[in-house]
Length: 113
Length: 115
Image: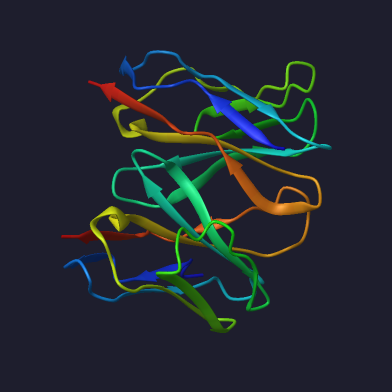
């Protein structure tokens, strides 16, 4: 079956630090990969996505590259801000159920001024 | 577009009471999902609908939970009777089947506290 493993948090960084949140997956077929972000008290929002190998998704300074050879989709940002403090979820859809998301457990990021 | 709308945003009730959560999906979306989020279990898919028909309810924890979708623009999740362990944030999400990479859009959630 499908599964997503992401690094456990919490992750605490100072403003302008470099961020990496690791995500690896197991899936049947050729999955599409996503990062969602959940700000305090809110629902999940799509942050970025990639639908095929070597695609790079990017948004709001965040990037992630779909690496089929390592089954990974690590999230990176060169310089984090206090406003990036949130929970980040890696997710995938795969196979015939291309609408059913499989989520990782989420990583809490706190950015201090 | 207004996005996925959920109500109420917060609900506090006593054990044994009936709780009804409501969701309005994005217009034109043909899939609707109900999730539950807790610290212990993370995000759990409870049930999803396609064209108003329940497709998979294997995530519904017990018979106390039921969900309906009487039309394309409205769904309810009901808990009767409620218990303290049902305290969680309940999310509704909708999706329109289409191009690869299309994905679900989440509502803001209902925070349920059962005392």
